Length: 177
Image 1 (cartoon, rainbow, N blue to C red):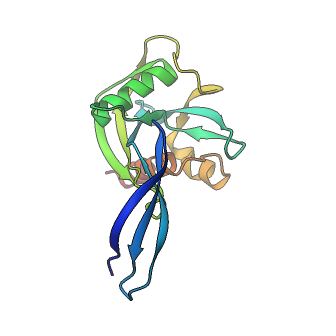
Image 2 (cartoon, rainbow, N blue to C red):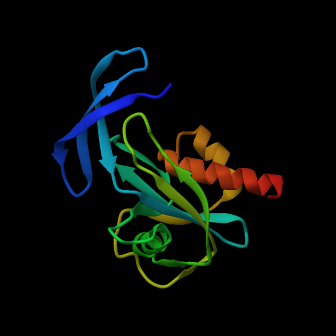
Image 3 (cartoon, one colour):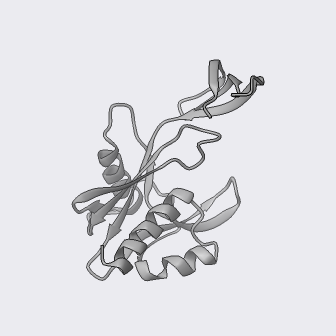
């Protein structure tokens, strides 16, 4: 059952997000205002080495006041291809240059609230080329892909997009795919 959108207007707009109010109608005829957020796409990369380890960052997120492992990533800049964004973010956040990239997932973290899409790439390895220029992580480590389910169960992977990408790659590795 599809909702009808009669229009929407911006309540707050910034370079990061646009909070909007949509005039929507349900199939049964009920009509009301629904809040939503429009955001730029994001891209992240899971660099996996020959030992089946993935390069992760350990960082604090002030909004939830929690620490966790994440894939390096960030927003796609205007006119930038998501693969270029993922590779750029890996260099900025870890000091590593990605090997060949493969698009593995497009995750919509919360489609009932915002239109954001997160592109997740897998890189065959990554070469250290220097220090991170965008210091967001307390630690940068090669973490065994096999440890992902345990890290997830302990609540140590906070980002839903990182978790989706890592579990996808873990499942693919155990299935031989």
